[in-house]
Length: 603
Image (cartoon, rainbow, N blue to C red; front, side, top):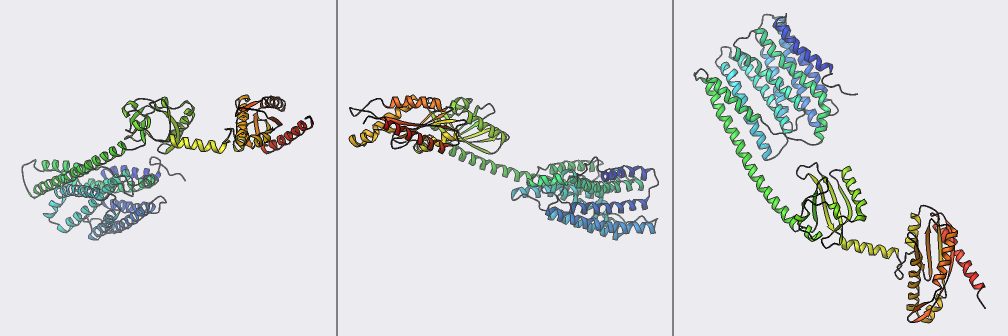
């Protein structure tokens, strides 16, 4: 089921409408104290339901479930207290005092949420966590200054001390919740999004500060206004819970990537606000207990910010030292590394070259800057270079390996094992990184081993393995010639193996000299040879067999002696995937040919 967006969610729209209707209902309408407590209790029950929905959401983490379960307990406690006060207000309509029982349940519920915010994993470690605690102390001091000036200083000197102290305790607990919410957001481990957490913090802070701020700024605004400023923050809190439910999938996706702490501006805002409050408190030149509290708070908050800055400066000095060490270590490693490291831009031009360029390509690193490596790539390797570029484009951040030939300063080409990684998305690199290792000797050894595995050591012709490989690579009908030398055994017996080897090499030279491109001559063993003719029919193959017979029968001089051999050639034609069948048919045809030649030989 698709989750409705915030703009279309009926619950969110209903809460927003309630927030707007409260103002005219109590300002000019029939709303009164009983109605306000009924609305307050109803909002508390809505909060319980919304917190339960978050605790049971499928995308909520284990730590998040624990947090929202504690929030449920806090909301239930507040619901009990507000329900009791509602019943008391209905029974005694003229009562204007808040019951201590209501205050006790609300304070207990809010204290439970405070514990949840403090116990939720904060993230960070070491010096990072020290900075978080500096921020916590700074903001808490600023909040305490405002609380002192607008509420607590007056309460301490008021006539109804019990009620004022109860309200003061409630305010402090709620402000602690606000602070915990904001710190969790900034630490990157909060079980709520930034927007929902900020809205919830605003609601809780409004619940604590709205009434005393209205009284402090406007004197006695009247009971109807006080009811409005008390209810609106409660509705905002419910809106925040619903908004978090809608944004829970997005939060889960972000948390899968790990916590990402944000830099906090809260301490600096707290300093500014406290300094402005100090100026405001001195507007009439009268210094009393309230002003002294603000002055002491301003000094304390300034000291905390300075302490945080000193810690940050020390951290920066330490990090700069570590950075210098790492840079020196990196420079030393790169300076003496045998592998070449290049960074190229989207046009394939070099923007960085390591000092190994002199060892690998015979050029100073500076001469490679601004040049295009595609211009140094061997023409035969351009298709492979295109494959490398396509692989890097399709797999950013992943290492793609290949082997290319790059031109050396002396004009020769060097084989290089290359690992390319597309780091154009990384602002510290901004290009494709190519790590190249000289593989010329290894490639030469590889090619030699490959040649030895697929070629006859004596004649240099293809062997049976390479013949079968070329046969499987053919895409059409082919013809096969099987050649057996006549008279070779007599030469071997009379003149020795050295003379026989020279005859075989001469035969190989004559075969390769008559064949066209794509046609393959192979030595199968002893004095037996084969010729693969792609795209050749039996008639053309028979004509070539006659030419080969004539050329091979021409006399040759071996060790100063005239020698000659004959050739019996069998011809077979068929599909390229019938290699063994073609060889058997050509072998049978060769023996028939040899038998015919013997039968026509003079007695």
